[in-house]
Length: 276
Image 1 (cartoon, helix red, strand yellow):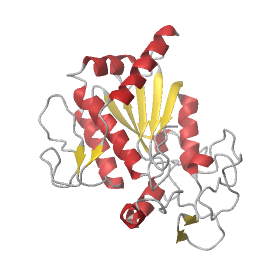
Image 2: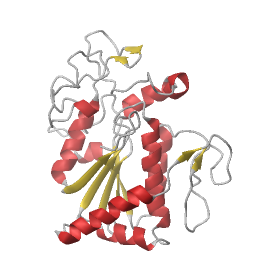
Image 3: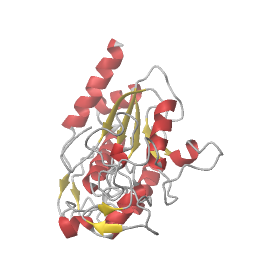
Image 4: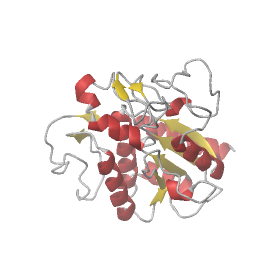
């Protein structure tokens, strides 16, 4: 147990010490023509802190595929929707049939080494918090690209199983991106929930100011479900859902936790600047 605590402490210290993501809206030689991380950048120690725009859903999923293919010895991309299907066997997609992807980083990503502690990271539970995905994707890139050059990172990867879900809420994220929430209101009044049809009106309703259909996934987990701070009104931004784990996105995370033995979980948020 002392060894595991020491590993987790070292891993958490790395999270805090990795340089902050700096969003600079200008051209830079270390980003590609699309303004995203240059996957063909020269090998060597990596500290890319300049982007020209936020990744959208396709950007993120494509980059995860590229990273998994580029670092096969320490990285594996998993289709979690297929890995944790419904009891009848159909994939546990998001409400609008999008795949939820998970990335595992470890010295043997195909093996569950019970001697190594497991750690879980996720982002974009709330759709409008675009920067949470950027921070987590930066962290993923930092680990993979510096594994061969940084002894602290290689030691962590060789002794820990790291799981990442950069986009917990793909439907809501696409809704927020399509409406350009950041530029319209700096995300303050942007879409927050998933896009489940919850209020009884036909079709999906987005009334603005985060009001309308959908469930607040962060208030849909079973732990203290229904406590103050969540709403029973399906139109409210903090609507907690019809029951705990009523949404496929939270169900999938629950199934992942049942299958693993996570010693720590970190959910990235930006609206209040919280690490949960």
